[in-house]
Image (cartoon, rainbow, N blue to C red):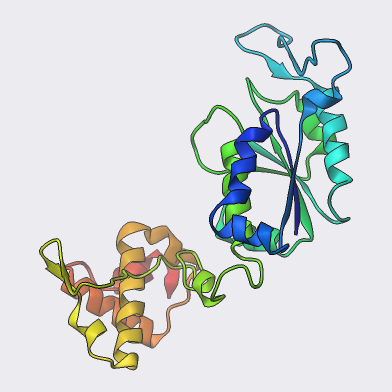
Length: 259
């Protein structure tokens, strides 16, 4: 995959390619990552990329032309069919489903803003998609762009050591939160590993993990179950989990529209 980031601060993006999953993917040639600085495309002596807002108000607004030219240069770095994605609080909230869709594409152009935001005409002319990483505001789009890059790259075939790792994550193929995980030693922080994980019964372990994923989702993110079809085994496991937690039975979940 080819990814180009349009940013005023390329040095904030560059370290990502040196470490972890993304770094290894870049080293193996599975991902090519480049930055395009709009200042390099400004036409005045001061490399101006922002100006005061029409109508008054605080802060500065990103100008159209330097960014539009930078975006066109970034488009030239990636294959045809690669969307231009603006990172902005007004965008669609990023989900794992959207990440999977982006990971299926040949490339991405990610546009990171600053100041009070983009001149709206730039968005209207250049954006294929606007994305937000959450209902909060950070100082610029570089951190959200890095979040998108990391989330997308780890889904590319062959990037992770075991492709099932991504499938079994929270928000994976089944839409549930992940189950708890444990490692050695058997006792730590005054707590022990659940006995079922020590017994070697793989069917029992699979059942326990599924029960924990269903139960965690029900307790922590119940709205995620709105999009999940529970079969008879899942319902029984969820009832069992909720009984252990002294919660209402799964019929309460059915009342929310999961029948």
